Image (cartoon, rainbow, N blue to C red; front, side, top):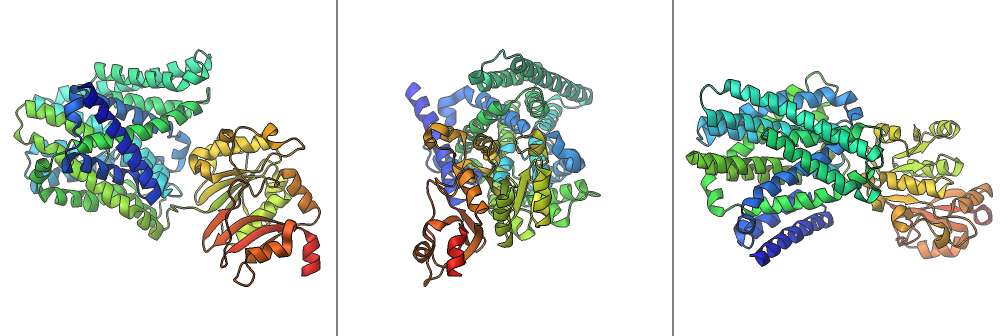
Amino acid sequence: MSEDILLGLACIIVLGIAAYWLAWRLRLPSILLLLVFGFIAGPVTHFLNPDEFLLDLLLPIVSISVAVILFEGGLNLRVADLRKSGGVVLKLVTLGVIVTWLIGSIAAYYILDLDLSLAVLLGAILVVTGPTVILPLLRHLRPGGEVGTILKWEGIVIDPLGAILAVLVFEVIIAGEGAAPQVALSLVKTIFFGGLIGAAGALILIQMLKRYWIPDYLHSVVSLAVVIAAFTASNYIQTESGLLAVTLMGIILANQKSVNVRRIIEFKENLRVILISALFIMLTARLRMDDLAAVGYGSVALLAVLILAARPAAVALSTLGSRLKLKERLFISWLAPRGIVAAAVASVFAIRLADAGFVQAELLVPLTFVVIAGTVTIYGLTAAPVARWLKVAEPDPQGILLVGGHSWGRAIASALHKEGFKVLIVDTNWANISAARMEGVSTFYGNILSQYTLDEINLSGIGRLLALSSDYEFNSLATLQFANDLGRDNVYQLPAGGEEKEEKKAVSQYLRGRLLFSPRATYGSLARRFASGATIKTTELTEEFDYDAFNKYYGELALPLFLIEGEKMTIFTAENPPKPRPGQKLISIIKPEKQKEGE
């Protein structure tokens, strides 16, 4: 038995991470491949059956994993983001939930011929979207403006609310007539105990960090222990209130200013990948072909109603009177994939209702998974084209966040701006900001390392960071600050300067960004180049004047910076410079001697 458990867990983890990696390679939403891998491992090949080796541990593992995922989601929610879109988010998680619930319940009753009580319960289960599916899609799509904020907040907040709604409906079904007072009391207790324990857990953790009662290397694991303890205690006192507790706990930690929770956030982001992959593989592998066949084509009709009627109606009513543009409303209407919480809640209630004698209860799980698989597949494959068509997102943004608005930093920014790329200069020197604005380059006045900048800066269309300040360590911190948002492969900084060997002066590789341009492109050397009259030059490479000819002509007087091909830009780096080809544009720094002689 122990070998079977070990083999099963190993398969779940390996298949999950493999799906994530392959999705990255193929530029597909990871959730889509997780469903495919889980379906093949379970219903198709019967290679993996989590129920056989996890037994009664399966649902507790799922519950704790969902709690950690919601806590991590809460850590990504900043109240400052709600200044413009808070009203829309509030309506989506209240009015939008009610509309989706009503339409889903009516469709389940008339299309699937379910008992009224089960139809209402299924409608409640299917109101949730959730961070397990929304956050990976948003990371893949990177929508601009308020769209990303609205979808992120809705996806995270709606999970505990949807779970609470499903629990209340379930209690009404079990209790029967006269359940209204009991349900009202249950709702009050859920909100009270979930909110109280969540806030208490956050305050305890803040005080422990603030008083240095926890060493740095234990920040992550202690926070994980507190999250699990808060979730379990809240659920023990009041059923299904734990999700609300951990979500609120994450939101409080994300918005307090007393302690730095960056280590906790980074750990939870890594843990989230493992948990999401494992959950989708486990729960999808539990399905059986007979269960899927039993729901028939009616499940497809229910899916169509949810996508084409329920979601657009909910968004239309929730965005009335808002400042959102029509294209933004249309995109929000076209993104509501269901995730793990729906699957977990359906699995729990199906077992309890079957034990209580409800014959159709066994249909809840396959129906929920049809909706999950259908919404993830449809939205996962179409969201990126729809976002590009509506011009609300750039899945592969080419814009540059440039740290350092000094004269030659502005010269680089202007050259890229002239080629049609978005450039945003960040600096604390008002003279540099003013000069950049006079040159037509977008700016942000503030410290790149400040919390204010993190909260206020708009990264729409920005895909990479170039740290060009004179302080090497400051540049390293800037790349670390934005490595999570932009990806470690998209943050760059100048090499270390000075007379000492670079390996003695430079910080560790994992504490800095990729080194720009070439090993000799230090701040001092670039400043001297421009002080001596160097300029930025854009050269179109052809078959007659290719990169070899360019090097032969300019030699050491040229320092290549960027390659442009169509709307794509490649940055030269010290470690792995690209190989220019005819048909590309080469942006480089040219010393004046050669220009005066050859032009």
